[in-house]
Image (cartoon, rainbow, N blue to C red):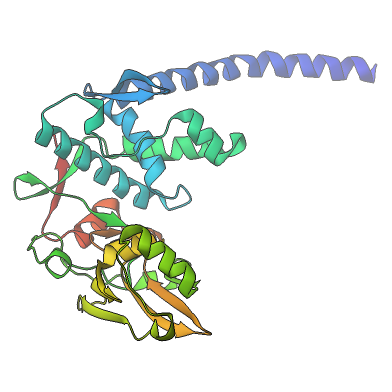
Length: 314
């Protein structure tokens, strides 16, 4: 008797809950369809996917761009800021080239398959939806200085403050000014230390300049810092009888930034590099710290880029 009552009760509950479950499922599908239809911007770009060229909606394309540019573990508002940067860069490049050729894009794009491989199947849907939300919730938003799209430079970690275009390239760019980003000194990538032997350093440098002459007996004394910026970014460096740009040294020795110094340590060269990236524009690490303090993506962008506005770009 008790078993029959249990079965009867279960059937009653199914009868009561079934319409509700069906309604929720239908509503969920409709909401998802509505979301997808709103996501499209009616602006397309051409991209290459597995060697084939295909046309994509710009906003969908930006999901793949943002996923390649910033840590998906960062706060949503920081990822939104990156989405606006990516969209601004895309539209700026489009206006400058006036071409639909795929090769014009300097933006890095990753496919869903590459995202799955990078994040793993278990985390793919969570991360993909997070990036997609960041793009969707900033739809059409770009960054203007006066009536022009800016060149939205960004980097991973600053040295505690960003560097101005004037200091770095001796070119005044009103929105690329130095601002404090003190959070960055706590980042795990704030400081990089790299040890290199004389023989290894000589081989690396000679690949770039075969005519290099550098004495092993006085190798450290033959390194002369010729020019650097006020914040410590190396512009030119003399090694032996050759002059190198700071960016070239950074590239050759795979340093995180050109803000470095060199010292002699245990018979080797010790490179100590601060920050990660060129240091101009938005610091991604700093943006994430601001987002944790409940700053909006617009607040983040207008902090790192001076006297700009975020608004719809088309």
